[in-house]
Structure formats: structure tokens, C-alpha cells
Length: 357
Image (tube, rainbow, N blue to C red; front, side, top):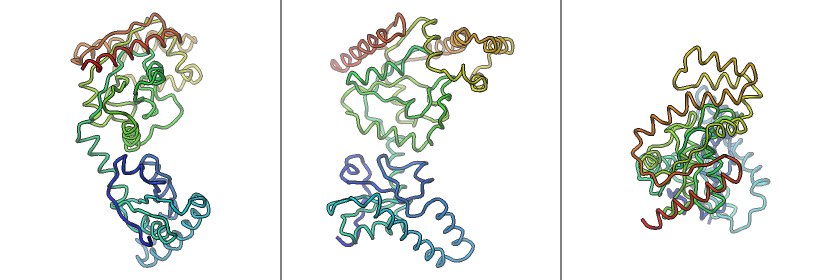
């Protein structure tokens, strides 16, 4: 083959046929979002792309294309000597840029001339993004979700991970959003992904699951930090049955203190977290919480925040919750043994329900 072929297929099965999916856009474009599993081999880096754009606007289209071509040639040569140096004659890559134009075709033409069976994604990243939006904004989700519900600090995330270890399908939304979901959820020390990359990561997680089997998901609001659950997934969550977790208040406070060491290490993080409370607790109560922090009474502080803020909010939302309740699991504590026993009980509830559906 001496010329690259073209395709518009971006479903999981089609993409899995390629030896490598190559995103030739700049690192900044790639960081915002990309096809999951793609490798970034830019034909123009961030600075080069800006330079070519400036020449195009301020001087001429011809000069921009000539300067850009030289940059592209050097970058493709470097990729051939590094990332692509060990690829065999049977190598079959898919190449894409922003809209399937000059950047992807420049790379693809050279790869095809080498003899590799090279395919260009027609319409580029925009073709992928349209397909992703359709699945997450327009189509029915097509998966059998089961929600793991419960008050703040009841160990839902840890138990969800144990459920995964038992061989049951799960999606950890907080891991995808890089946010723990609660008041202290932003204390991970990392930025959340873009909304687009959060959605792409969610699609990638779904594509690795069997739609015929139940999928356990932690009950969340429609937003996890600053990331929003896309409509198709949120609608599936709203209509999904749930399993309720509960644990003693003191155990939950101790668990939260262990889970969020940042509130002890950095007072500014605690202040930032308290400022994000959805319902203002009142000046007197907020001042009392600050005094607790000054005195190092973090366990008492967390207990107060859960009892006075989170639990009433959870109770109010539960009153309006019309989802089917598959069962309830009460943990006597949140130690390792209790979490493991709860995970096994939840697995039995979820799998038995769908086995008899």
C-alpha cells in the first residue's frame, strides 16, 4: 500500500483492530481529550503550532505551510527513529488529527510510503467526539447499573474496590473524575481531568464491561467536583436499583479522618473545604468548627460536619428517592473484615437480583 486509506469507524471493536492509534495533534490538544489508548506523536508541538498559526495570520498561508512542512518532516523523522523504530512490516496504525486534514495526512502518507497499512480517521478527533457525545448525551446507556448508596464516610469507595476484586463489574466514578466526591474530595493534590477526557475515560470503562452483567456504581450527585456526569449515564443512575450501606457515626468519622489526612496536615485545605459547603452552617457553628481545628480536635470536627451537614442532606434526598431498594447492608465497623463481609453481601444481593430478572 502506497497511500493511506480512510475510515470513520471509532467504535471500540473497530479501534481494537489497529496496532496503534496515533494522535498527531499537539500535546495540549491531546491532554484535553483523545481517543482512549491513543499515543501522542505530534507533528507540531505546542510552540510550533502557535508559530505556524501566527505566520498564517500575520504573513501568508504559503509561508506558514512551508515552515510547518519543515517542522512536520523533522518531527515525523524523530518519531520514526524512536517510538516507531521497532514496528514490523505488518504494523497497522490509525492516524488522526483535529479534523482529518493536513497534520494526519502528512504523517499517514509517510507511514504508508514505508509500507505500513496506514489508515486515516476521516474527520479526525471531531469524528470521535461526535460519536462519544451521541453515546453519552443521546443514546440509552445500555448497561445494568446497581447503585451502592449510603451516608458520607460509610466506606462506599473502598467496598466498591473490594467488590471488583471479587470479580464483579464496577465503575469507580471518583477515580475517573480524580475527586472523592465529598466536602474533602478535592484534597488529592491533583487537578481534575477536563470534562471531555472524563467522558472519554467513562466510555473506555464501559467498553471493557459486559452489558448483560450488573455493574456496581457508587451513588453520586450529578457532579463530582467540577465534572458533570453525562446525561445518558446520569439517567441510567437515576433509574437504577440501589443497595444501601450504613455504619455507626463514630466509625464513619474515624474512617474519614484516615481517608483525608490532608485536613490535619494543611489548615488552608480545611478552610477551603468548609467554604464549599452547599448549605451555610451558620456563623456560630462555623466558628466552633474552626476552634475545634485550632485545638487539633479533628475527629470531633469531622463527626460534627457529618452529623450536622451530610446526614441531614442525605436524609432529605432519600425521602424523594424513588429507586428500587434491593437491600440494606449494615456494617458494625469499618475495619477490613467488616468491609470484606459487606462486599460479599452486596455481590450476592446484586447478582441474585439479576439472575432472577
